[in-house]
Image 1 (cartoon, rainbow, N blue to C red):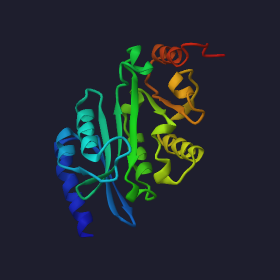
Image 2 (cartoon, rainbow, N blue to C red):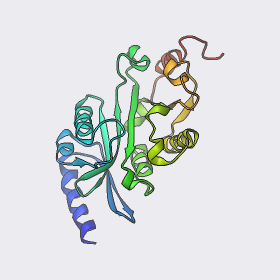
Image 3 (tube, one colour):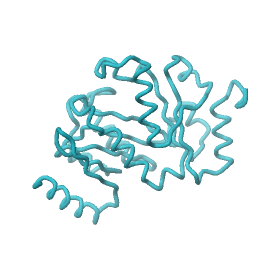
Image 4 (spheres, helix red, strand yellow):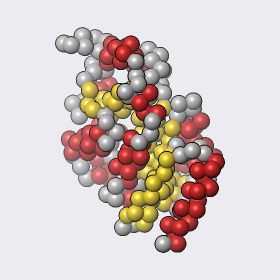
Length: 224
């Protein structure tokens, strides 16, 4: 109970400094503070769990999160135990060298990473993060995409097959209203388990949606 009281006091102070969404997730491994978007300053005062290393070593990944939080459209949400990040979700503009960033469609935002520490998997941290984000109003302004590549998935750490992992990702992303969507993008088509997940906000204009559809199919018709 004392830990929960401290969490409530901390959130009261933070709410006065920066508007954020936050929830307390009670698990059998302790409480998790589900929060975001985090500022660069907040991220620097936290550390990453040692096993958040799917993309790069934790120290470098923390710097990457700080960099993302500083981007004009960058957003970082995290599951926090004490002062340690044990899970996170990032959003940012697609890279300009990628298909999704080449057309300059300002409404496209990429869900770039979703990672949970191996020692905290199975407690609902990823679901809680995505449920928190689904309550945000800003998501209605964007076409949110997630490029899921099977070679990025932690098959060994999860003990899942590539198809089981894909099913898990589809289930998680559906909490944000994202759906597997067809494309002829070569990177997505490179492996049958890869997928492009998409959510189109209800305030996205028809011209932006049509431009995105043309971007999805550069080599074939949208309706073929």
